[in-house]
Length: 129
Image (tube, rainbow, N blue to C red):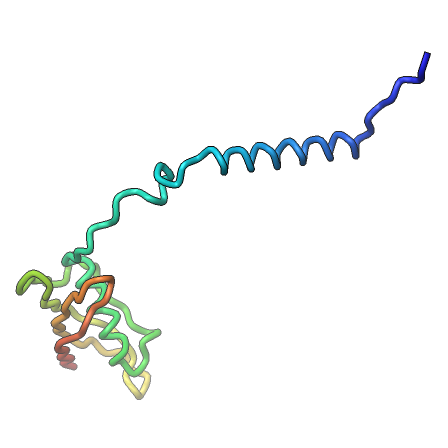
């Protein structure tokens, strides 16, 4: 009678890694790219007032002396009006430091235009101290 062979911890670990590797390979081969969640219907290329407000704030930050100090009110306190399919007027205020380090409140108005493919243009901006 031959002696019984035992598989040590290292052997079981090796079998486990091989089994997981085979399962991962099989799932990759069997899944169709047409049915994966990443290939769902394309998102519509549209913009809305909320995005217009966000982009107007970003354009405004480029104009400030100390953009890291900017404090904006809630979006619900801004006035957002759609001019046509892709253009909005956004009016609000910002509290930020001026060049002397003093916090000041400035009213601002921006006209932004959505160009498609996540691209926005600033058509006009007016900042009143």
